[in-house]
Length: 481
Image (cartoon, rainbow, N blue to C red):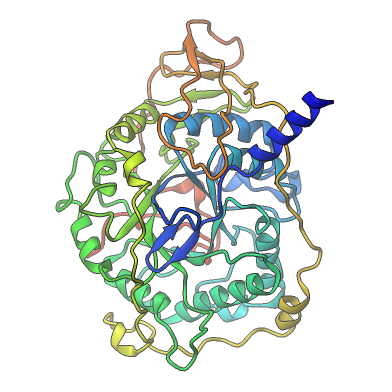
């Protein structure tokens, strides 16, 4: 009985591996220590847009065995956060959320999806901004608000790509941000940040940032104001530099931000193979005063060849050389010191919403937002229906049961997630328990060389309508000046 009680107590301790972070000014902050948190993330959408299929009853966070496999590899890599694009609120995500939680990894959740009615039509957002859409959006919030490692929700992704879309969509993105924040305030036991993930289109990037971070002077509790701002940037290609990549312009442009700014995607794959030399700059004194880290695109290899691993249909994994290249770059960074840096003591006052914040011709300068669609106020008040639920659960076995191979075909043995202590986030070097063996798996074929990267278009995450709020729009990754 004593042994059983001890094991239960140990399991309970493991269930609270990470502490829910807070936004304080321009930083993510550990409220217990006051330490500023730097995102060391990876995009996680195995199967691309096809990885989300409600008709078949699965999504990227619905299979605990697969999440365990991937969390173990991400621990070895040094990841502390994942971004997940398409999720089904009707599925149970407890095992996967608990696994990533115990592994010391936060979750960034996009609320939109590629399916009709589950994202706003960016060309005519007023036609799809409905109570049905919001009910599904709030259901995503309900499904993930219970997990302590849910870091944030993205209310939109790459919606604004030029001045024309900047005229139509900002008010609706800001309205959805408002609605999600009001729902969280009504139903969640903690505040969870909500914000926008932008395309790195320089002609409208800083206008978008200003539009979403500004505050209504007449409303001190302006819930439409974004809590964070992120960007998908592919301007550092090959062995580039702080200035050649234009990162210096990003730092200059975002200096003085009143909310956290970070890369929600990065990792240009032309030329190939990738060298990930931007890592040392992202986590350097040149960028960290303004940026809060970044998310590498992406974990699982899809048609656009950005992946760090290949996942076969039988669940076996072939690690690509990019995985170890990225790991090597992380190893050069002193994350122990970086993650122990205290947050800024003084917050920047957000700018007052005004047309003076906007420079691009034709970009929205009206900060009057759309009213809630009929029926939405009742949903915010009473909660969504049907009501998803979520909770951290005890995982009885941390061992990975899928075959995982190195680029040369050797098989990783002893692969398992290493549960972390309370309040601990994963860092490079946390999990080094796995080893390689020359035994070759009988299922699947070993990958001996990294696949050639095909180009910048991420066709694996493109869906119709291409301008939907949740969409990942192709061919926007060349920096537009």
